[in-house]
Image 1 (cartoon, rainbow, N blue to C red):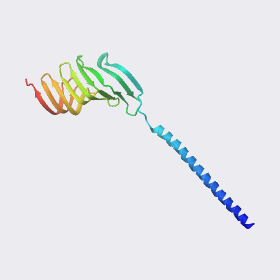
Image 2 (cartoon, one colour):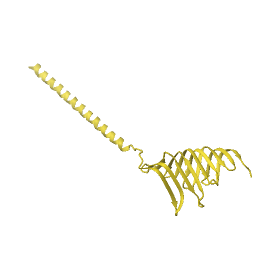
Image 3 (cartoon, rainbow, N blue to C red):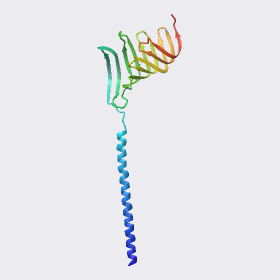
Image 4 (tube, rainbow, N blue to C red):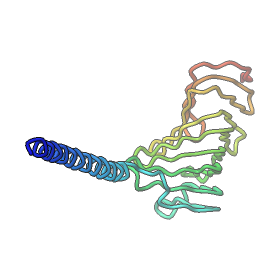
Length: 194
């Protein structure tokens, strides 16, 4: 009888140990999967998708000030990211812009891609960038920035500047939108003297 009592106690101890083991395993598995779900929720809440808040095709925007047209922007595609931390507008298919001075003289800007940063007022123009005016001056480069507030262009890239007086090449330049002030960093070429 003693042996059967020892056997019953042993079976009971094993059952308690097995039950305890199964219970702990169940708690661990439950905790793992509940944390997995919470982790995925946390990932979703901190992940920001860069989906445009606005999108437009075939745009033609006229910017005015005091009833006078300051510029006209034309593009086949515009993506507006106004809801991200640093809002911007992207023109993945490029832009064509006409800028007007106070006298109505025009400056033309063209690029294959552009991005306009709302907070800084800078426009980053990329890919076969050309800027020219009605007097025959033309600047060509691969990347050019435009500071809208100061109406000033600049680049650190190489460029070609064509003028009725000649052609020059350089690297790094900044200039006013009407080409009246040009500051070149490195320049070479032939220009006609008067």
